[in-house]
Length: 484
Image (tube, rainbow, N blue to C red; front, side):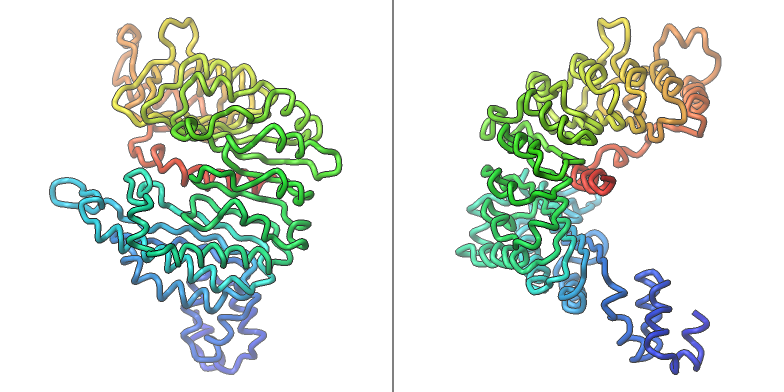
């Protein structure tokens, strides 16, 4: 910054100032703009801000309240909204949803005014963002994520509560109208993603997408907790160049799968599917893609890879979902009340041994079931043996025996880039401890580290493995689709 503080910096031509800015991080750009008014003017040169990534929090823990962040968001969107090409935005109206107290944590439901204020702020911030983007014809990537799942779980987002926050649904209607305007005004949209954005997307939204953007769109992800499908086969037919798709598993119908297998379309490379067991009563699996549909799709899209996340889905339904012809690369089984059986893990290792690279097995419950009971071989060890491309293995909530963990590390070695197992999931065989000297935990760390070819430790911080499932799906889907 010595250059910026010198007198000569004040006389630099604007083109050179912009060139200097191009080498700086966003934070350093803001610091450098304090030199003088000319440098501040150059700060907002469109070429410097083609991409913008923001997370807007609405809670009280860190970063201030949501209402305090709104002026900053308004300033940024006023400056960049009309020309930014790529915008990735996460809304978190309940960051800090749990407020620290002297003796534990207090949920927001004990403070209804806080929840009401958070939702009002969320609606205002969404209106601010969409209003600034409505006339942006250069927008190529729009990614929105609403971290509102915890409010929905506690019933704070039911219709009676929302009617108090948004009387007559005026703000909701305006939000939906603005979103439709952005789609209709776009001319070169390549990436469109909206996940769990309360009230933003409707089943009619995709019909607003302009004809130029239907030709340029390569990635589409529309996921919400609504019952009607947000992506219809009729609208999907317009998107002939789509290469990546993300949607609710129950909305991926036989007709949609057959459409994507047509020869007059671009081959599909990435497919992300979210299956919520709690919604299966209202959205049953009947009508979803059958084995023959998947075979037709794979014949057309030979490089297709699939990411499946199942939340609280019973093993009986999982066995229906996991078709042999689905080229699964990543699978995440997350549950609270349900239990994944050894048969499901066995099926996964048998059917997807050529494609599986990521396997996440999570259970947020007090019990730690043992999948190897009454078996000669542990199903997790068999999975590591059969799935030769396995690079990520994350386990919590199921018992993992120490000797099996050592076997997994030796089978996959340094190719297993991520091995995260929570400390409380690991158990030790008392019979084996007789033959091993010293601390069993120390010996386990040593043996697994040798197997992986790097230093390894059990996960002490459960937040590493236990994160919010919908947020994990959104971010994993982003990285998965970006690699197509």
